[in-house]
Length: 391
Image (tube, rainbow, N blue to C red; front, side, top):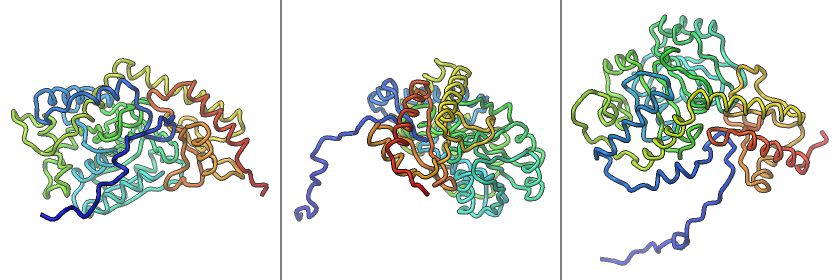
């Protein structure tokens, strides 16, 4: 056999070094030591009974976090995008009409995913920072008669917390499933899946839960399950096929579980631990803390002369704050200065909000008045030292 022609990379002969940073952008957030240590437990088989017990614990934690009794509750092996695709790929078939609410990047992403599988995509659009009235939503439902309506509860690209009251009922009036993205909101603001008649709800592990990225909690109502089980065609993705995932997570009532994919067992450990932290604090306490810290932070920003991007107080996402990019400054210089000088991440806009805003995320363990003060001090320092145009 010939010798190898590609030499061993010298970079991998050096020890891994990762700096500590204050992760106060829109995500991922900092992971507490307790959750990191949970991930360092021994790796065991993804089909071992001990893993199934951990998965059962996770399911119970998700049901609590979502406030749902849905049996079809699990965590997708992947980030929030995988849960978004899991929802759309299972609930929608080629040629079916869908309606996507676009008030930021996540509505745009949902529309593209549905388009890729051959759905007839319809959108309602509002400028960044805005939200839709129930009247506007009902008008679109009546016009397009979709099988599924998508809405981002916490639109992290614009900082909007979208009202949900009454929308589930409207969707069901028009025989439509209600799909909600709560990646940036879940755990940080009140959310009641069953009470709001949400049919599919998903979130991510790396925001309020403070777990590493890589698992995405999701839940399906009985109404959603009936539509999915009566599909005419198989879902386009084998990996995200709910019938297989339901069996792996013990949601299909069958006695035996069949191998589908190798679950990320260490990610399951950290997700379980993060849900345990949330249970210990209590959902309502977490909601209250995030709201109080957000209001404290917003008052501090306004006292500095900075302006909040979302005008309506009731529509401000308490986990991710959007600040109008200060006039005369380069937002990239501000974020780079804060990273270099304060070892602290905040970010600019995303998608339709690029160039318009700075985004600050105070989520989970990062949601504290002390951390809000740290960001305020860093912003004040940046505005003092960064170049300001006279134009």
